[in-house]
Image 1 (spheres, rainbow, N blue to C red):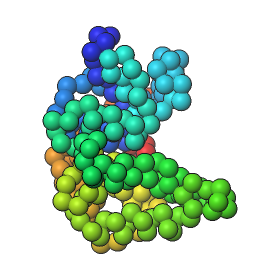
Image 2: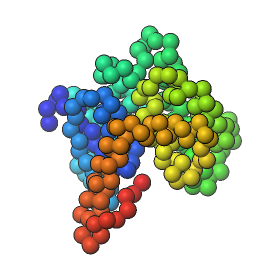
Image 3: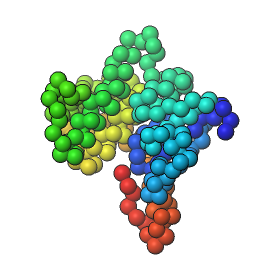
Image 4: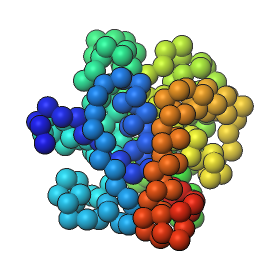
Length: 222
């Protein structure tokens, strides 16, 4: 692999879909390495040599591995600033941008996974998100203030939250307020979202047929 390559390891209908959308919004060339999770390719020795966690997204750029959703988004938006999808380091809005990027992985997703698995959270002093209701209310109330996470400006944070809120409302993990639903609809209407949604649907069907040739139209996995 050329050390200058930008390679995204991706599986359809997973967290890495948002990274693909971000790359489309950035308009930069990249190579896509698709994993068939229906065939358990994320646990293959070849991929575990890339990311021992066996998770996507995984990004390799100039020979350096970047994993974890927030890190991938932050890295890409900063590495390609021409698209204007991240406030500069000296921009006063940088703090709010970082806050909501990190809030997703450190608070929102852990709270919803605990809720989905019917797990009792630990005491507030030992739980990174405190309680699920407060965590969900934080982002719901924030989206009342403007069309995007940073008000009138769309950033990479909106791609993270736009993709994530689509999933959690689809699986009824939260009940969206009117502002949250309007935000989901606004992001879903972007051409990049529609393009990756269609391509992932085709990839998912292809993967299902490869695992079970008699079932070429199996539903996509989450």
